[in-house]
Image 1 (cartoon, rainbow, N blue to C red):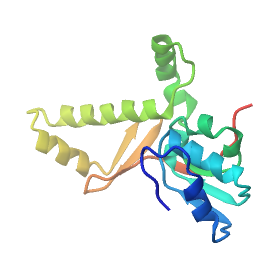
Image 2 (image 1 turned 30 degrees about the horizontal axis):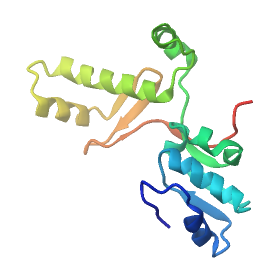
Image 3 (image 1 turned 120 degrees about the vertical axis):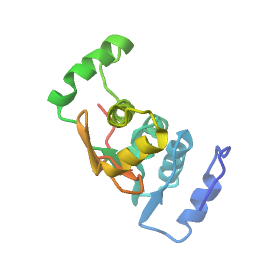
Amino acid sequence: VSFGRDESNFSGQVSKALAGNPGLVILATLGKSSGLVIRRFREAAFHGKIITTLGFIVSDEPLVAGEAADGIWCVDLVPPPEDEVADLRERYRVLTGDKDLPMTFLFFYNSAELWAKARRTITDGNADRIVSNIKQMGDFRGRGESISIQKNGDMTPPMRLIQYHRPK
């Protein structure tokens, strides 16, 4: 079942998905609409399992879904060891006033560090050579995470499957 970007109700799509009486629904979605989809499934009395992607946890979907999100399964980023990010967390708090260091910020920070490391190695600034250097790294140890880099340039951050529960 699919839906367009401008969809806001989702009742039709949920009804269609539930017509076969599934025990599991897998959502490959991103954005506020995903939270609404989760809510619609629960409003339609679906008590089966819901699994969703990393997009759920790194966006505002949990807020939009509300209590309907409790117990769903999603991909999450593995939290970094605190001793590896404590100074970065403090700098982030001073700059933003927010005590929580979002995992997405850590991604952005580490991707900038990855580019910087390659640029320090390729001193002539040749973009093609910098990209080639990154593809050859194999693994990159960033702040609080190790990123596996494939020869084709695909990168995999440390992720895990978790059951989501709203903060108390």
